[in-house]
View (cartoon, rainbow, N blue to C red):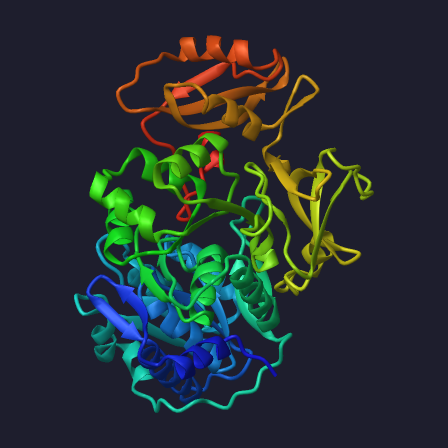
Length: 513
C-alpha cells in the first residue's frame, strides 16, 4: 500500500516540533499539521466520504491548503485542486466533470471572492453532496474552528486506517484548457511520490532548507515540486498567497529562505520591480542556495541578470501536469547548460519524434515525448483524449524541442504557438530571446496574427525597461538587422503590462483577441 500522505506522517515522527508552515504571523509545527490533517480525514470519513471519492479544493496559498490536501488523501479520497480565479460557471464545470462528492472552498476576501462563486456553483451540481466553507480572517488557523470546515477539524485526530494502493488516484489536475474544455489529468500516489523523491535528490534537499512558496498550490509546480517535496524533507514552508516582488524580497531575508522556485515572469519582476538594498542583497546571497524555474522557457537574458545580481544558480526544468510534473531537470552535480531544461530524471525516458512518430536525430527539432513513472494514468472520463496523448506508452507533450549530443533537452516552443509565415516555420521563443537583448526591452511576447498575404504575420508585444525610450518603428528597424527577413515582427506594440495567468504565464491567447 502507499498513500502520499505518508510523507507528512514520517516528517512528524522525525521532527514534530519543527516549523512546518509559516504564513504571515501564523506558524505551525509538523505535529500541529499532522494532528489537523488527521482530524480532517476523520471528519470526512464521518461525513460519509468513501475511498476514491473526489473532493474539490479552492484555496490560495494559506495553511488551509496543505491541511485539507493531506487530510483528503488520508481519508483515501482524491484531491481536485481548482484554480482560485475560476468564476462560478467554471467551478460548476469542474465539479461536474470531476464528479466531486464534496467541495472545500476558502470563503475569500475582497481580492479573492471565492466563497460566493463556489457556493453558487455547488448549488447547481446535485452529485456534489457536501460544501464546506473556510472562513477568512486575521487568525487564519483559528478561524476555521467557527466555520463549516471547522467541523472537520473537530473530529478525532488519530490516524485513519484507510488503505490505498500505489496506483490509486491521488490527485486530479485540470489542464489550462487552451484547446477546448479543461481535461482532468489523473495522477496516482506513486506518480507524485516518485516525483517528490527524485526532485528531492536532484535539488540536494536538506532538512534545514526553508522554502518560499508563492507559486499557486493548485498548480503542479507549487504543489508537487515545493509543497510535497518540502513536507517530505521536513522543510519550513513559507506561504505567500500572492506574488508581489517586494514582498518576496523581504520574505527571502526575514525567513532565511534557501530555496525559491518560480516561473520566468517572476524572475523578471524580481529584477525589475523590487528594491533590494545592499543589506538585503548580502543576506539573500548568504542564505539562498538554489532557485528553480519551470512553467515556460526562461529567457537567457533574465537568467543571466538574476544570477549576476543574486549569486545563486537558477536550475531550469521541464514538465507538465500530465507528468507529475517533473520530466527533466538541470543537475547541481554535473554540467549545467543554460537555455536547456536538463536531462531526463531517473526512471523517465524522453525523445524527440517527427510527424510520423520516428525518433529524430540529435539536434533536429520535433515533438517531445515522455515515458516513465511520472506519466499520468490518463484523462478523467476521456478515453479518446487519453489514447491521443499516450501512444505506445509514450506521452506526447505538444512541445517542440531538440536533444543535443549530450542528451540535454532544449525547448523550442509549443506546437500551438508556432507561426507559419509564407510557408516558413517561425518559433516565437527564438524571437523573444532576441528581443530581450535590446537595451530598452525588459519583457517580450510574440504571436502570429492573420494575414491574407502570408497566412500569418508576426507581431510582438514588449515592455520597456524603466527610464528608457524607444518607438515601435525603431524597434522594428532593429529587428530587421538582427533577424532573418521572414522572421522579424512587422508589428510591435509597446505596453506597460502583459496579461498573465495565475501561475505567471503570459496569456498569448488574450493578446490575439
